[in-house]
Image 1 (cartoon, helix red, strand yellow):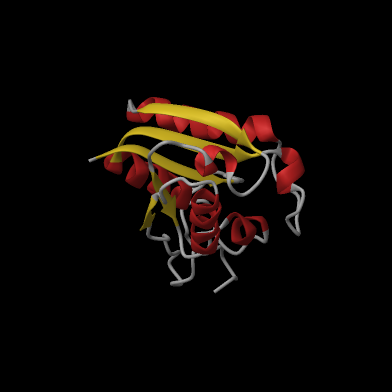
Image 2 (cartoon, rainbow, N blue to C red):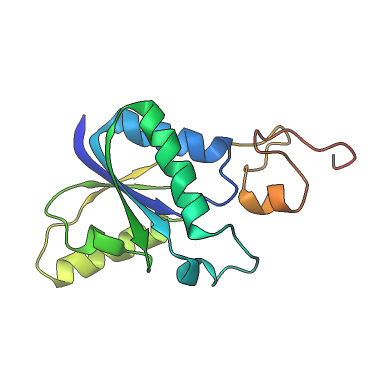
Length: 152
């Protein structure tokens, strides 16, 4: 078991994929450090997202049910505190792997050891495409990954 697992995300329209990611993180580490993107940082997305407080509270509620030690913070950029932590494991997905590699380059530039990077699975909907907030927002799938009627 790793001592500290670090990850970040928008956690918009909290769905089954988010639950899997956070459960996977909880199974890996004694403590989780989780960044939830700020409204300002999330505004760079091509669509609107739920307010920061809503997204933060969804993550908080889920983690409280897991009975795992955690720290939540507002994420204003892709790296957050991971560029200066003494130790930890970065939990990435295929979509965020490049950011994790960049974080380790920044760490090396500061004279810090790189963090271990682990790749987490991405949960697929019943059509074998990833569950995502964007797909839910477009009405293709529900938060569990089930196809909406007429969207097959």
